[in-house]
Length: 136
View 1 (tube, rainbow, N blue to C red):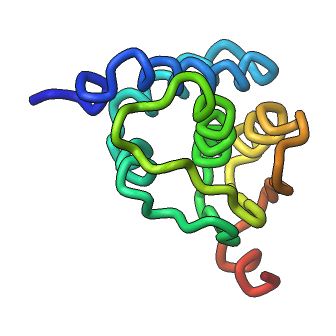
View 2 (cartoon, helix red, strand yellow):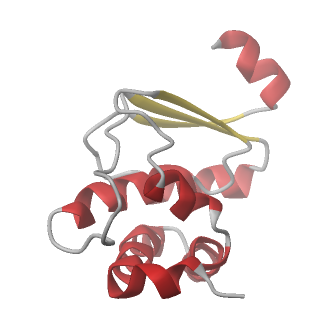
């Protein structure tokens, strides 16, 4: 079984490295987890490679963990100009990102990773998804 990074080559590895680097502000565990998850869970690559997230989308990420989807999309914006997998469409520019996470430690890691402002508002709420979604 081949991993998506085999097909994406160095551009895919650059994307993983850039997305994972945001977690240095959180803790070493967060960096290693981000690298492992982004490299081995193809859903992140598929979302970009197949253009599944439209431009100007309002993203609600329920159970966002440490906010990997937001970090992935921010890294995609940064990598698009100089190191982008061949054949992939341009990355989306969401209107906003709201991550909801029950676990306080993961929510804090997400906040630390996303503390630097990006091209769209990104918010992390530590809450039970059932209650938080009712507010959205």
